[in-house]
Image 1 (cartoon, one colour):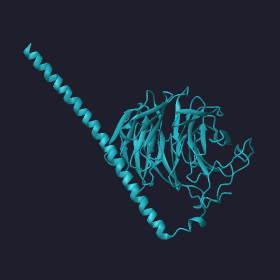
Image 2 (tube, rainbow, N blue to C red):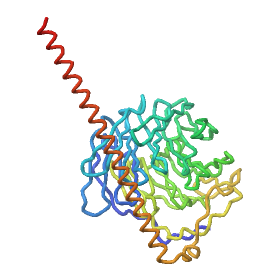
Image 3 (cartoon, rainbow, N blue to C red):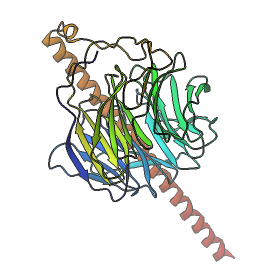
Image 4 (tube, rainbow, N blue to C red):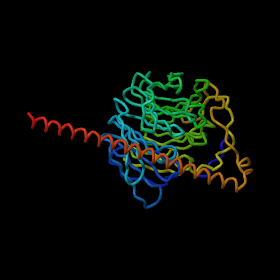
Length: 405
């Protein structure tokens, strides 16, 4: 059983600055910043501190359809209808490197949990994997027969999941680069897919208005939710793995209790379709974006303990607004959480040391990210300078040849 929530989720603040529909939102690791992409071709970086100015990054030549912070929070990746991916340093200068990733619109960008790789998905029907450093192309996955809307690494980086307008969700082995399973239960285009924090199951949202969860070890359907009255555009797992938030064209956000297999909350905030949603890394907040050009930040307000360990369930939930029974079993797709009793064993000094070490390592990782990106920018500038120098020398040679003739 999940612990009862102390309060309902509440709207904390909203940001206005985009001039067209918001397409994607993501929090930095420390919740200091929130990134959003929009059909207005801009990437916005909002500060979570009051009275701090937002950064508007210009560079993409067409709609920005996806954004994501690197695990350290020192880089932001964005994908666009202009077929490129940009890696930004989220500071006042807004410097970025750009690379042509696909031959069609880039619908999805996602960092691996170690921050070393990037997976992209496109209307050219392919999924591509790149190194973050120097944006070196590694390999392509190409068995979808229509636009690929979304691609995500598993938490351990060994699998990739993708969703497509061919109405399938495909699971890929990153090492062998082979499709190991196709889930074909959706009756519409599959807009969004993501891994459960345990890596044992996936959730997908579709134009058929449903949300489905599958076990990726047994390749079977675990839960089915029919709670929206229109297209499901986006979804995000709470880091505890016990809740899922969804965004729909019916203008609502819905929070699903995965332990009990039921709808927990329906949130009304956006005027028109809710296009994207994402929990913060600690789950205290979640952000949503809509076709109303607004970015909203919500306080989760769930009990900090998030309940007892998740127990394997001997049924599948088939939710149509109310709780119902299904056809298959839920067998530990959702992982166990530590209880407060276990955590209290640690001494205060140990926690302080661990926090200090974690902060130091995060700072080092961040500095390495910035250095890598700076080197990449300098390399691009050097290449441009070399090209210009070559042009000058060629022009000079032509002038000399003309004079001698």
